[in-house]
Length: 190
Image 1 (cartoon, rainbow, N blue to C red):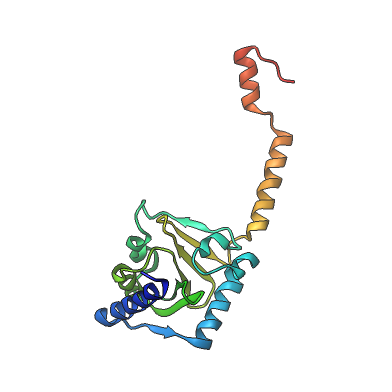
Image 2: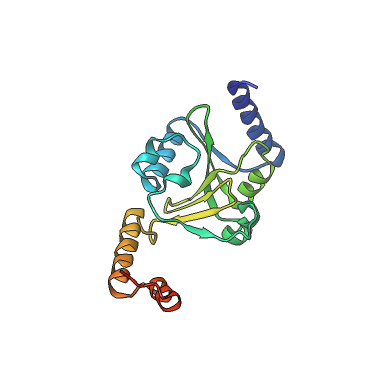
């Protein structure tokens, strides 16, 4: 199947899923879609991620995400516990054909129905809170990652903080593995 045919099939599957399930979705096109995509990218993605093709958004987060335990199952099954049904979110799905995102807005109950029934959805999509402060990334690895700009640390800050902590630990604590080997094997530390 050609790429153009695959894109058309995906569009038909999206339309079918919304129509047959009677989903109350706002579908964003044109300038509105571009504005929401810019908001997602500027708020949550690194500079590299803002230039990348849509898809693996979770690879380009500028914040250190928290992992939500989904019990080793597809994040879809955890939606009721994580979000509740009435919460309104934006759903971003990669549109590889147009190098963009499909963008929808709806209640989590409808988004869950859509994700469960849309046969062409491969598992990598994002959910952004209505106020634009939280991002949830579902991955094809069955991970659900969460970033909250009000409390999450930037990756660089978090990495620098971890490195400084490791440096302080190395400077103030003995290397217990080395000491253990010395004590048990007669091998001397140099």
